[in-house]
Image (tube, rainbow, N blue to C red; front, side):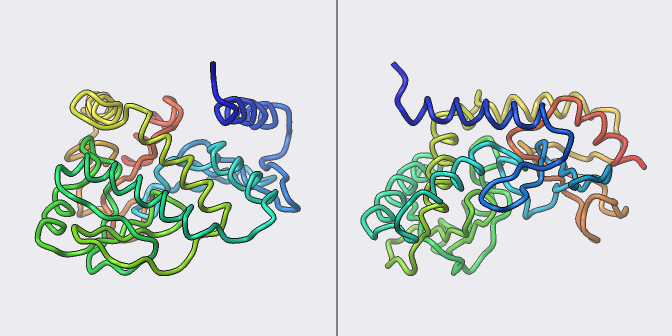
Length: 257
């Protein structure tokens, strides 16, 4: 038997899909806000054929327009309190720390906020979750900040420290949903979904000369070229966990134009 939370997720996901399919506009209306519709790394502006691509280091790991984002806003808006309790926040970060410890193979402690001495933009997109540079930093007692997995920045360390600041309920709900997805989604490990996607991406992009390497959900490009869908000087594509297969053909055209 599925839990009430799972049933709510399935129901809400279907509502979002139906809303997208039955409207002529490019947005969903919720809580007096117009929410732009997205398909993975592509965002379609409301009432406009123009597209924007979120493929740089600040891109969300779940991509644009994912139902989890709308769900968290919906449930968060129904909460009588703006901020979650200290106990709820501590429980989330304790469970997250245990998960990251399992991925790294040594103790990792996660905290709310951007206070790390190093920045990690790639963690979560590698088959083993962490990129090699972050593992090395953590082993050497440095702290790192990761800001593109949850709706807020987190700082990671191999030593326990005090928490500072409190999460709003909608951010906590969204973070818990993403965390559940990462934990139960078979994404990590030598045979996990990210490794399988990496192999598939490498095969699909084999003939594109600008592509130098595929690592997990990261596509390394030649550095002596400016790409229209990335900020100047950037040469790595950050893909989300979810996108339409047809996007790869569009991506090839973007890379080679």
